[in-house]
Length: 136
Length: 136
Length: 136
View 1 (cartoon, rainbow over the protein chains, first blue to last red):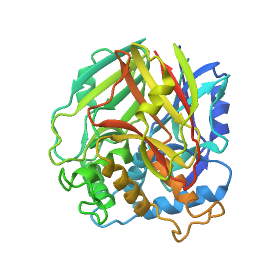
View 2 (view 1 turned 45 degrees about the horizontal axis):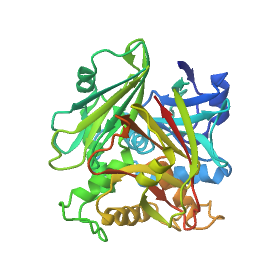
View 3 (view 1 turned 30 degrees about the vertical axis):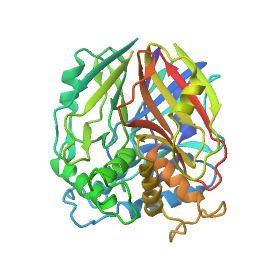
């Protein structure tokens, strides 16, 4: 069985944010067994799974990604939407646009330290649209 | 229900290319609701989803990835297949070998600016083989 | 139909390791047609698909990723779990926490050169837990 749920996340500032609970609030009932596919309908923000315990990790991700794909990089020509735009596209493809998480016993299967991250790469990204697909 | 379709893409030059329509031409009918999984059967090319409006973005991706994983990097030893080969493997794992896109109302669900990219990391990659799996 | 199988990998040293056969040994029967989703329940190791023929490729991956996200990077503050920890989180999100592989004719569909990699980013990662989901 396939079930799809569309929702918008709250708007977040540029950076990495744990959204596990916000996602779960939008999904109501999970099946006993299955998988959850989360797809972000944008090209300058991404989704990933990582450490959800220490907020310093979120900060370090932002620091690292800004060094990896800095603004005003020589040779970059797509700059008309602001210096944060092209780096945002690049970062989005590095982390990816969707994640897939197993569901077991009516719950998401996440390791002890794992949480869902929204990776907001724009300065003003607004409320990002997600399409969740649950296969059971 | 699961349906699989194998096809080869046209050969592309090294760089990032939008292949949304080429993929769709190979899939004939999409189901009302489901997901599409696209898997590239190669280790030196990848698939990602990103901005499909401005060709400069494709060019900037190529510029950035060549800086990120340059040819002739000190310490790299797998060089027998040419200087573009090992960087191609690395880039392929950074963007990934497969993408999963929701299907709704008989259509792929892509955000306004999203398109499917072939990331061709070899100088002469040839016609890349794709296996599409549709779950409905 | 959805089937889930939990297993632990053997412990591996820091680096990239081909685990295709080890994964298959844990899965017993594959269905005639479907997809396999492998999810690693950790935030400092990842899964990817890449070249499984030349061990030099594995070594080059380790060399490259250590340059990309080095230890003792200025500005990084999450250091209490050791200098290899925060780079491990970053690398894990760059390669990703899960992979999805098509199944056809009771076998995984992998290209000629493709194999499944465990990307062990910690010095002492231990036995990593995997949840496999097979959809058929």
